[in-house]
Length: 471
Image (cartoon, rainbow, N blue to C red; front, side, top):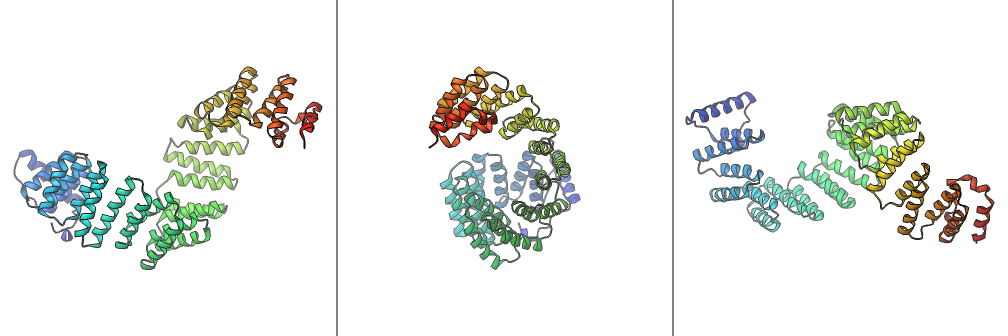
């Protein structure tokens, strides 16, 4: 096939081709098509997930062009994507026999081995292909394939080296640039990323993705002014590249320049497809500026994009909390929890909201759920004990605290909390005994009892006991 002379058919021409082919197949009449037409047919069926039809078209092409390695490779690719590796590999062998220099054959074979977890075999295939690859584009693809092999093994430093090599072959490779930033975030090797991208920009000063990656590397090191400059170059090169506007807004948000951040988020909204995360960022800016009505408006836009967006419901609840509108806050928190039942932040906020309207029974139920989800957090033990105390279930209160005392041996705060609760429950002996235990464990934490109950500041027995342990 002479791909350099191939012109993509119009949609009407393509549908006419499909119609003619299917009519011939239906009536079992022979039809002669050139190689480009068969390629279009196979790709059409593949793109529409009609894999059986794609395979039949590939078989028809092979029957008509038995010495074309391309169609053996095409059929093998379809079978490999369906994980039919035993059928794909012999086709690749035949394709290689017909055209041993076709790099696509080796890329597909490497993918098959990679899907089977045969990393060494996949690497061997790519290394062999490197010896015959003459075009920079082919070598770039092979380095990207090598990056896949290393990434499957979670060896991200090796992945980064392969991506750099790919970019040395093709400095404008979007796939390599996009993946390079992802790996840089994982490894947090921002200094190296800055050095590499500055070198890349010297060779390709109009690579907006290289500038974009450079901006993120600067931001990763907290060099926000340089990050903003880099993102500015991105927008100058490509005014419609909305990630640059979003990233600029993110940096301005971090530096608490919320009004300026809003300008860039609004620009991104103007030029991009509606995006729930972008609406959420915009709402967060308005929340920081205390424009809570506007914040809720954008959160509702986010919900319009994704009605199951639990974080947006939660943030709406947070805006109502800031207005002390607990009824609406609770409603929003409940919606968030319904969508994400195991999010402890959502549950904690809901429990606190119930306490704010003095619905202690409802708060207790939520604190019990939180404790079941994460019994390793000491604070959850304390919250649960407090919730039991609020509903006057003193037996369970001290049962939880006693278990917490055993679990977190020597924790002064547990003793101080028990002291306050025993005092409120009318057991002065246990209250003072636990106060002494707390003072022995950590005297400096004793102000906790006054934070819990400021009336104790006038309790002579408590004050006298504290003074006895003061150095």
